[in-house]
Image (cartoon, rainbow over all chains, first blue to last red):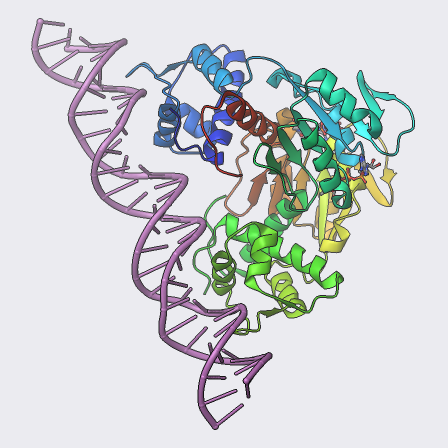
Length: 216
Length: 216
DNA sequence: AGTTTATTGTGAATATTTTCACAAAAATTT
DNA sequence: AAATTTTTGTGAAAATATTCACAATAAACT
Ligand SMILES: NC(=O)c1ccc[n+]([C@@H]2O[C@H](COP(=O)([O-])OP(=O)(O)OC[C@H]3O[C@@H](n4cnc5c(N)ncnc54)[C@H](O)[C@@H]3O)[C@@H](O)[C@H]2O)c1
Ligand SMILES: NC(=O)c1ccc[n+]([C@@H]2O[C@H](COP(=O)([O-])OP(=O)(O)OC[C@H]3O[C@@H](n4cnc5c(N)ncnc54)[C@H](O)[C@@H]3O)[C@@H](O)[C@H]2O)c1
């Protein structure tokens, strides 16, 4: 039914949904592809193409109903029910994620953290943090499917292997290393170092006036 | 001289450089486009194409000299000298970044943090954290060109405006909102919520077996 | 020295993504 | 109720990005 799904189109869909949440809380009831395009920084045809991939229909000349669209996107993105997530590695990044309040309103709940340096259970807010040896049991008991890896790169593959073996299906990885996963598990990497280096590159480029770069 | 530069090609270049650092520390002196391709998860022709954009040459049948290549990439990426970075908003993410030791080896140094909730100077490790009203003076005195924005989305545009006015040329923004910048300033957004939502989407997709997705 | 082998560098071929552009349809105006 | 306006939905076109494929070439071997 759905044929070609690029990662980018999914990211855009999630972006549209977040924009719609804001529009909705402002009381808007109707939105045009043009509005979404402006907010997301893309072309309006892109917005409509993205929607058409998922057979989302609007009203010619009437745009889209904000709440209806919001619901359709939430459904597509699997956000119509709460998704439980665990975080492995409660260091700098792990703590930041567990502390963050903003995930709840995306229907994402961090239900536990795990760290190898702990000998006994702790807590951040009301999220329990466990010694790493509790993880296997926790995943099975709570049917967790999504995990964040925020351990040093040297431990990341080892952690991933355990996660996958216990049934984790999706991973967001902060360790700056390429991990290998079986096809049954999706992994997405966030490399903050690279993000910063990229900005630095463009700034140097502008400074040296080597080239006029297009807007990013 | 340089004509078309996609963001992706820059990210890949930074990736190659990071891989080379690791190879070098393992004592390797020679590398083939095939090796880099494997480590970066791309096609080897892609590696060579990326290099050819910057006129980086290897030796036919001899591959590339690790240290020479490393140096060339560092030069291109503007990493041959230390880049000073400031962080605005010392909350969850801001603290994680300031605490992180890994930037130094990429020649990036976080030289100060700023937060509106502070009345007097503090410190994280040996990075000074200042009340926000010290920021303008600091940027000018220290000729800072790169900043991280890690304040709530409601303050982000306001912070950006100040930064730009004082001469910041590149921004890494964590606030989940589209900011407007003049052409003289590059901005790159990291939206951790979206990253997580994307993983969730793919996991649900796999679960429902709607489609066989290509590897991400 | 000549032959074989391995790898680069890059045009050409493919594939993917984005944008254009316009008919179709619905709302609004006359 | 006809004409006008506005916006969708989507093929077609354009732009970008990736991969193929192979001549050029340098190292290694005989
Ligand atoms: N903090 C940043 O700003 C930043 C920036 C770029 C990249 N990263 C990357 O993100 C990852 C996390 O960074 P961080 O700064 O939070 O690191 P950190 O050292 O602060 O935290 C890592 C945590 O993982 C735990 N750990 C180690 N091995 C483990 C294991 N096998 N199982 C469970 N827990 C384990 C450690 O006890 C520690 O608490 C690293 O790979 C780092 O390179 C972080
Ligand atoms: N922490 C996460 O895991 C996470 C995840 C997704 C997105 N984000 C986004 O990243 C940004 C930072 O998140 P956080 O969790 O660190 O938030 P936070 O609330 O912990 O920290 C924000 C900090 O910014 C400071 N601040 C507010 N206004 C300021 C101003 N005008 N000038 C200077 N400082 C100011 C506050 O005092 C606070 O210390 C937010 O926009 C958030 O939506 C964070």
